[in-house]
Each structure stands twice: as C-alpha cells, then as structure tokens.
Amino acid sequence: MLYDILVLGFPMVEIMRKERGVPFDRPADFKGPYPSADTCILLDVAARLGMRCCLIGTIGQDPFGRLVMRRLESDGVDTAHAVRIPNKNTAVVF
Image 1 (cartoon, rainbow, N blue to C red):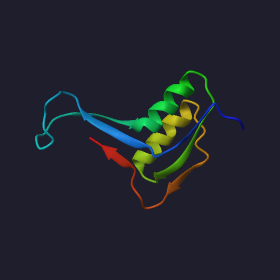
Image 2 (image 1 turned 180 degrees about the vertical axis):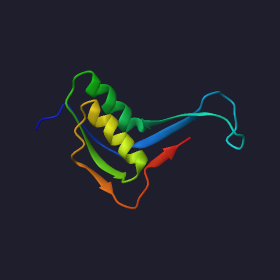
Image 3 (image 1 turned 135 degrees about the vertical axis):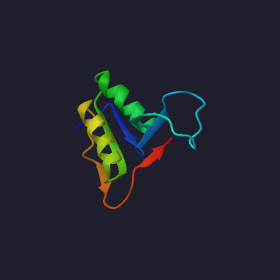
C-alpha cells in the first residue's frame, strides 16, 4: 500500500489534571488518558484529514497501548506494522 505519511516513532499516553496548578502529591481529578506524543498527534490529525497514514514502531501490550492503537485505528491509521511488546508498558506522561 502507498502512504501519504509514514511515521517511525513510539506512541505515548497523556494524563492531565482537570485544573491547572494542582500538584501531583494532592488528591484531585485527572483527564485522560489520551493518545499523545508527536507521533500519535501527527498521524491522528492527518488520518482525520483523509491522508493514508501508517505507524511503524513499538508499543507496550498493556491497557494504555491498546487505547492508543484503538484510537489510531478508529481514525484510519494503519497500525499493522506497530509491534506490540508483551510484558512492557506504554510510556505515560503526566
């Protein structure tokens, strides 16, 4: 298959506070998790705009990794070349 955009990289997940300025050592509400990192953001936006996109990379075979792959796939990104690594976690950014 020919792609408009082919990206090599690693997906991450972003989790953030609902309110600004709340430190992580205090109980409060979070938003997320969201697929994140330049890799996911670029592919997700481009696929939504109708471009043929493909991800080449690795991702943990954990709930966060499944979240990212489901989101990219539902938006039209080909993730068949992304390797799921058992017993490894997906990067999470707060």
